[in-house]
Image (tube, rainbow, N blue to C red; front, top):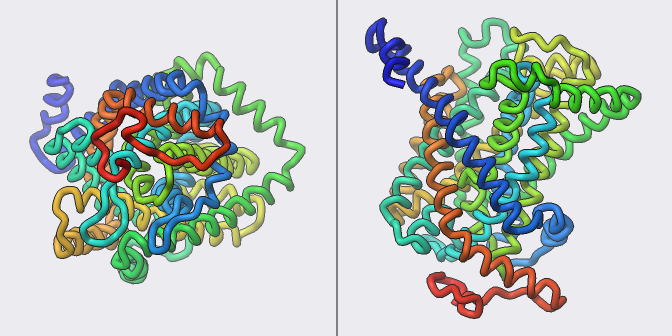
Length: 480
């Protein structure tokens, strides 16, 4: 490790070399630590809950109609806020890159990791509900990893560190990256786009629309997400369905290609860092973010009668992200027969793939889709970050200052190419995942007490209501 860093710094200390070190660290942390932990925890929790992420999937759909008290955030609204932060430009650009670099077989491993990872998502969302608290700013619930780290593990300082990393990662860096990806969608339509005033115009308009939503607080973020996410996902899926139907005869061929490439010996062993398995695992786990510590922040805001109900609903979020949106992106590319050249990846590749099926207007469709996906992801990022701001300091002025700083980052993302911020965000997210995975593993016993109580009540056919003391849990705030 020291030799590798010394080699990079041979040319002196400058911004480019610092960025190379951060990129090297990011790759090593992800490949050798985070991905391994995500897979191991996913398998561990899958065994603990006896594959309930599969058997309870119908229940997650039933809870979409779960009622909440007036002025509270419903389970559906909380789910859509969570899904909004996941369903971003990476569902288009990230899938295109994974197919080009890792091959079509990476899609199979993405599917498999979504199933395994959703077990971790059930655990973290349930724990977030168990240890949520009422906000002093309003009458809504707040919670997430920082709260169960403090209240269940008694480690407040670690919770503060987690919150600071989370706000930087999601609200600042990832939001800037979403707006940057959104901005690149206009490069095909405006000559010398980066050298014109248009990036600034788009930055001002886009950031202003974001500000209108996020300054309305958690309730407005949840309200907008509950309408925007289903609408934009449905339109994007309809385009995918059209391409699917018009190429119906080639569907078996594409499935065959995915499965054949997934188990191709050369694809698996040829350079592990870019192998078909690693790219699939990375895309699957980092797209649906199961176990990463993001979903619990929105899950905790829901007004529900039992913590495990919201945990079960997270299965649907993972399914929507991976099996619908990401898979649609993959099939659009693979059915289009576009050249999978390393020279063209991300959004430009998707624009070319769609336009080859429906004509030139397909490029405009993807551009509009990218704008909507970026918008929903950013307001989702602000939504899931809010509990972490409040955890550090419950002060309205402090929350507004953080919002303004992060809105500036969103505007900057439209104009700049933030490689340094991307690498910093990757490292921050890796640290978040490590802290969260260790925490939920340490809290496995308390989760299982709650989850078994849910399964027992579910069999009785009566209303499912959680009473912490009846389960032998005495350290919650709102469930006593």
